[in-house]
Image (cartoon, rainbow, N blue to C red; front, side, top):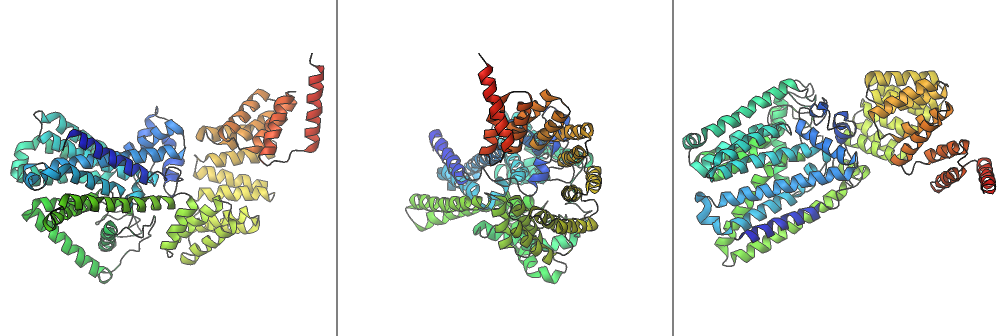
Length: 640
């Protein structure tokens, strides 16, 4: 096919995938997005070296490239969620186009050219389109923090693409050097790229050189460079703090239990590859404890592994696809324990092997069965692409709000206590307090000693004004998890509401001792100190809150009020301006600014702020408004 045909087909891939994800841009931060993005101080500045040192125990731990990418988003638009989704989609599109290039060039190699060369561009476009539109990919694209997976996938694909280009180039060294550099960078996205050197060798043997000996003879320097990336991997494991959710040291599951569980998980992934329903954000997959529990799945998976191993030896091209599937899954789906046994995003790159194999085998079958093979293949490809695109669009609709995605998850996995707890948390954020209590009750029925469920039920009780019950639940959460900083902060707020100021201050102090980066706790302690007429200490707390979270409008408003009480009017006005700039619907800040303008005899500005306050649902003091109108009229009368 001509260059223009390649361009058109690439454009079709881009447009189709963009359409399938067009409803994903307003999806909120969920689950691990909160700690890895919203509360991640290291992404707040591109100028600080801290951006390459992600915090421990979050999804971006030991993943500086992923952390850097989120810092770029923050520099562009702060925590505006649409820009994060846009970058995720861009990465996914680039990965799809790279896969397009890999498949096309592979089908044009001597080993496959005779059978597929005339259809190479079309087949490559179908593989890329089906892979990119598959709804199993939504978790890697729409769940923002899983950019780590898609970014690693892009680096993985680019590594292989660079090797393929180098093998056919008169000047291969720049391509091979690029492959090594990209592979090393990919380690900073996710550790699973450590399998890339093995996959590249298998590709070389299957499609380029014909044997391992010839592959190493021709490209020994390349493989030495790719192997050197394992040293980078090792150094990062030593230098960076990791996550407590993975590794041989975690206590919740043994390597043996994890290995027993994975056959069922992998077979589930395979089923979803061919029939992607139902998809679920959080499976809370139970771990197997005895071989008898896992025996049927283990036997089936062993047969698949044996078939893949046989194919690697006897049918290298088909064997490569099997090796691709299993090797890329191996870091997360073998023996190294991870807190969660099953997450769909782990299939992001392994899915490419299944799609490529199915598309090419389907085309070969169609060509054998009908003379109109080209037309039949196009019709079938369009039907599959449309079906997958519609399924992806519908799946993205589940992510439209925190409530919708957790309702979907709890409905599909009703035995998942974490899903019910997260649904309760989403209901609290939506001020649906009775529904939140019910969801948290279901979570606690499943897991009676689950501190987050007590915490979120406490938040729901507090939101509904049931303060005594809220304090009781906070007490239970702290008893179960004494280092639960957020609970101390929330209990402090509730203590303040019932007039127990000393206990509120003590809780804020404890919250900040446990979590010194908690901007909200500093703001709340500032409020408590302001209520005690300790404005200078309150201002210091508001300063710290703003330093930690420059987007915290409440801290600006509260500091402005403290400045006003201290007769620091210019500073107060600047803070109120910042508060309404950050939150244009912040009624209280408009009212406070109106009072300040009145004190400064700026009556026109004060009236404008009062009108905005009323527009936002506020009810100003009638006497204040009456006096303000009178003073404004007098000022207008006195002015020449």
